[in-house]
Image (cartoon, rainbow over all chains, first blue to last red; front, side, top):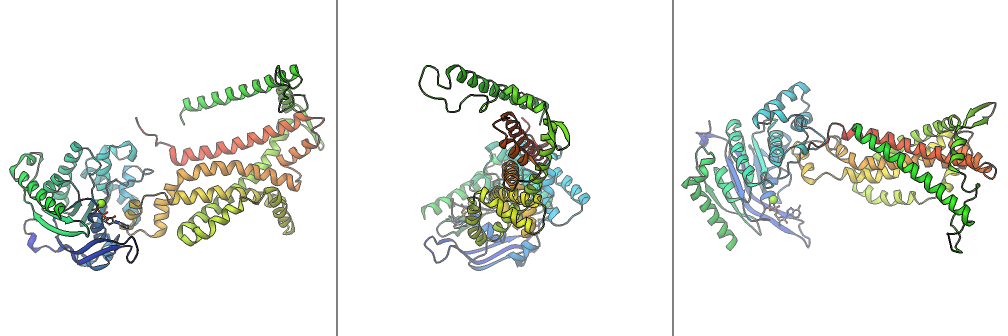
Length: 264
Length: 288
Ligand SMILES: Nc1ncnc2c1ncn2[C@@H]1O[C@H](COP(=O)(O)OP(=O)(O)O)[C@@H](O)[C@H]1O
Ligand SMILES: [Mg+2]
């Protein structure tokens, strides 16, 4: 299904988008300038760049959590605002953002509750989601009883519970240790394959971007612009892929782009 | 709460009580030996130790079990005080409930409209600097003129004391969620009221319960002060007022009523603790 991606709809389309924080004041920040970006449905896109270059801001423009100062953001052909109201995307932050007074299944059911689903439907869906992220035995646990990696899986399950077509992730594995992180990457790819969701993934880890993505978007700072887009094709990825020369080549390419960015 | 924890709490309470009685009696005994001076010095003790100022702990305790004439009947002091305390408790409970409602509404109002926070918060703070002794007769007189029973005025005084910690801590609690939690709710296109109910109010609970505990004890204080300042016919305030007038002959009685007031304070504090455990802690202890 992902094979004939040429025929698929644009998931995200950004045209000449600027974002200025605190305009016309002393602490005015030009966070993004002249962003053009197209993301095809089914793609896995990473946004990478030095800290403060506007990755989170760009993600929030897509999510309609921020409004561009100029330009246009379309999600599945609609305005970003309409897409948010239609709940076309799910969101995962660096800190799982689970509500600690809700157990795992209640956390996963939160967006469904807001949509007014019946209890039986919610429970059925949260069971499916727990299966998807392989946490069936932990449904009655509270977030504090889980490891960071498990919390992040619950957060992914929550974001996918209402089957959005787009998943927005802001450094979701940034707080995890290296081993957990690599494991979560493999898991995320499996979930991506199983659900066919389009993913936009913010990271500042070069190997993470190279391993996960079909396309790596490199941003340059002050003001944030798109420096380059690097297409990666590693096929079906497993932990073995990390020893693959093709993976090495992809990380090198991303690293060189980032060096060029840093050099200004 | 586990059984062990409950036992430990009970143990601590008893040990503290015993220590306090020992300290009381020890100080009194010392004062009696030295004619109210620090041993071997000319410096007087801050509190004199005669039987009028500091009755023996055993006399106060005996007083609690002694009989007292109340109108036409005679009852044990404990029962007499318990009846009075029950009345005060009712006033405090009404005052507390109203205070919690008013405090929460104020907090939500200040959360919703930032200008309300800027405009209201200073006045809420000022409200608490008005001396209770001055305020109580005003409120009670007003309530009487409206033809309400005294209980209404007294409960309102308790409300006046309780809404404050609830409003202030409530606002902090409602504002406590991370901006990413609020963004998450926005990403679900959740309305302001859904965000309040599903995120902000639950997140505010750990801020609210300490305020409720403070408010509960304040509601007892407020009720007693209210009773005293208008001279009601019943309640612990009445007992304290009566016994204070007869302090010179019967100091043990005033002490026993003070003990009853503290026990009532402890009781309402315990009620809030139990509610807290039911609402946020139960079944959620972190597994080690
Ligand atoms: N709410 C905001 N108000 C003002 N400036 C902001 C705000 N959010 C981000 N910025 C600024 O915009 C720039 C980009 O931030 P961000 O998108 O968070 O970067 P990144 O995620 O790449 O580290 C930074 O200079 C940051 O300080
Ligand atoms: Mg960021």
